[in-house]
Structures are given as structure tokens and as C-alpha cells.
Length: 229
Image 1 (tube, one colour):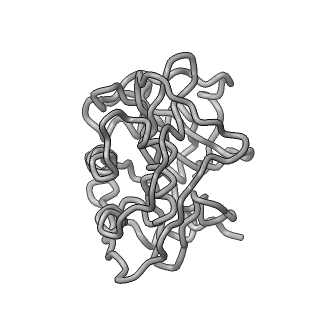
Image 2 (tube, one colour):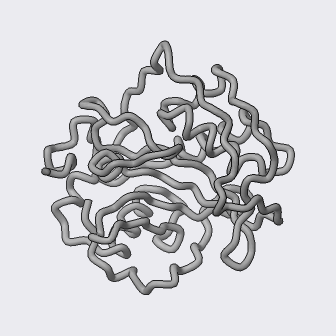
């Protein structure tokens, strides 16, 4: 199967070498999410927040492979190749993080509709609030998603079509991503790759004021690893 990006990028508008935000009509109807509870292998954990991760899904890889559960969203001919907001994740000290901090009722429809364009999945929105948003002191679903959307909308994205035909390492991709975002450096960018080196997600490291900060280096020494888009 040919990767969607190599097809070429139906959903991308290019301007000055930077990806522009795609048009995103909110569907008049969407499936109501269900309450999410911690799975058996994820215990609730309350701890101080020391930083955040803003996680972005790269749709070609997401739509190329079967993604199930809360992190899935519908892929179609108009999905294109773009970044979708996975979520804003609180982090803690020592490589740990808070999660599933309080019960989370089903999100109101108006909240889902307001944030659907950034995260086009009611169940993923429900999941992000239940697992991550409930751990932020004083947060409501609307304040949590407002902050994650502000951070997401402030981003610019490199010309991914051009990068797809460029020999890339993690470091070079991080440099390209940072170059189009003032105030960001390659040290603020981490990548989530599959076993073959295909890009699945970009993770941006933020401090408690939601400004770019240096990421903790992954255990694997992979900044020189070749990546594929």
C-alpha cells in the first residue's frame, strides 16, 4: 500500500514552505462518547505537575495502520496529511506523570463541537479529559481544551511534502519543526516513531506556563535515527 503522503497530500495547503491549517467543518451530528475508566494496567496517579507534553498525531501513519480504542478517529478521502491534536499531557518528576485523577462524566456536546476541528474524535476528547485533564488543579473540560487548542493553534508546521523527499534524522526533523516556530528549538521536540521509523506523533515539551522547554532525552539514543514520513 502506498503511504498517503506519497500520494500526494490532498489535505495540505502550502504557503511559503509552511503548512497552513486545513478547513474543518464540524459535522452536524457525531456519536456521543462514553465514560472512560482507567484500564487494568493504568492505575490512577496523583502527583505534582512539573511540565507538559503537547502531543500531535501525524495523520498519514495514523490512517495507514489500524488504530483502535479511544485514540482512533475516522479517516477518509478528505483527511489529507496533517497534524491533529492528540492532547495536552501533564508530566511529573522522574519520568512519571499524573493520570486518571478524578471521575470524568461524559463531555457536553457543545464542548466537543468547539474543539472537534483540532481533535476530530468525541471519544478521544473524552479520553484526554478523563486521563489527563482531570489531573490539572482547578481545570474544567472547557479550560483544559481551550489551553490545549491555544497551544496547538499557535504552531506552524514545516513543509512536510518537501521533508518527505529529504533524507531525515530525528534531529533534522526537530530542527525543521523548530525553525518555523519562533522561540522553539530542536531540544523542545521529540518524535514517536514506529518500528520501521515512520513518524506517528510529534511531542512538544512545555513548561508549566506552556512555553517550550527542553525535553528529557529518550532512553534510546535515537536522535540520529533515519525517519520516514
